[in-house]
Image (cartoon, rainbow, N blue to C red):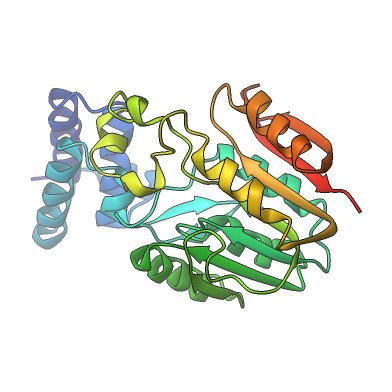
Length: 276
């Protein structure tokens, strides 16, 4: 089988399985397992496919046809221009979340940062790498997620503190910034998500209980014990949650509360300053 035939076969397999953007997915898997860029492919597409690489590619195609996310197959993704390892223990970092990091970066110089529900560590590690923070502490309730975050910290050469904690239960001290992308999808909506998310990404990191606001309520309520006066609290939010989260923050003593939109024009971030 030639390289061109292998790629075409992959495209057909994913198309028949109903995989979104099947041709692009087939190419990404092909490029990953054959270690080949587009320019090199066009030069050598009529060459024979190496059997070992072909077998690995076919195995990956079968997984993708089962709607296992591409990133869980290649175990790699990019966030804020940085490389991250991902597996089934963590949510796959989304580009939307980069908007949250960019907002925190505006206030991170020399600050002590706490990243709650860190998952892959993409938020805290990006801040440590790009934000000139004094320190970054990252917490998660999942041991599997913390292993992934630790791996990503090493991968990106940053010094962070990792702590297993159910929100603030094991946290000590105070911080200048608390940032969190908590589970925020209402329970009833989880079953409506696309198969890649519903069946393969960790439900623990998705399900925000009845109305999706459970974790926001808990974090806002407790944050005053861990956030210094004049410190900032940042959240990523889901669709339609901006008004409710910002209202709770104001009631808890936060000022300068704002709801900010992502690049698609959707409400994505709520932030506010704890009154001095």
